[in-house]
Length: 360
Image (cartoon, rainbow, N blue to C red):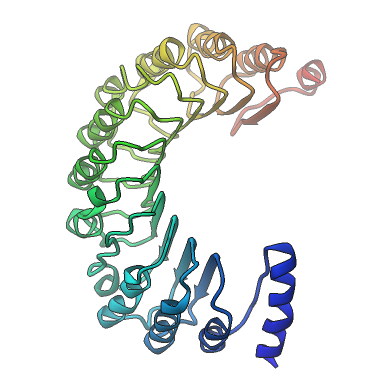
């Protein structure tokens, strides 16, 4: 019955280009063997994948010679051991015309992801997404193994490396990432996520900023260092010059939430860099914690920086401030006629009803 459902669904897929199935890994392997003309395949497993299933799926994908986009998400599949790694790596070793590869791993056994070496020469690959969430033992030696062949991907244009809540990620890991990505000369989009990686300090932050200074053809840059308590004012100072010589950069997303040790001086460094070298930005997502004690001068500087970006059409902000300063900043930003999208997050900010009505 599942096979019949898949066949009917595949007829829909051929017509509309997208279809979603909720079936077991065993049935999935059988259906993929029947239909081998897919160009895009995204697989999601949550606690229901074992070594045998992964082996069957890997062997089946040998016959998908038209596959250009492949994504796999594996969550809480604790039955996967070190021996299962070979099957996952085989998914990427076949001679597939892949242009986009995404691997998303959540909270698996360390013996599984510590042996990953996913990258083999795929000349057509342009987009790479690696996401490892809550992999608490993942460290710089593991990342070095994953990325050691990345220099062979000469057409790579879009890279996302995400390690949220990976507490063993430290400055050494960021140095490995820097050295690996320096070899990619065609990079136009970069997303690095180190949310809640509490062992990253100013040195690691500086390694990433140094990397970005060498990537002058970037069009999109996203950096997530939220909830990294060891980053101080000295780290923020390394952000100076990061956006220089990037005439093509139109999207900038920065998450520096809860960087409480940077103060107004750190905010000044950040805003000066954006104002000086971000003139072509169209999208600016700025997640920074502006505490209640921030001066009126600093709040005005933030508003002036945003309003100085003449091409800006989208803004996202998070900040904390006193009610008077909040109203002034909100009013100045919203009054800008060029903005099409505004997202504001105001945690712990008290605004009286009268002020809310004034804002409306």
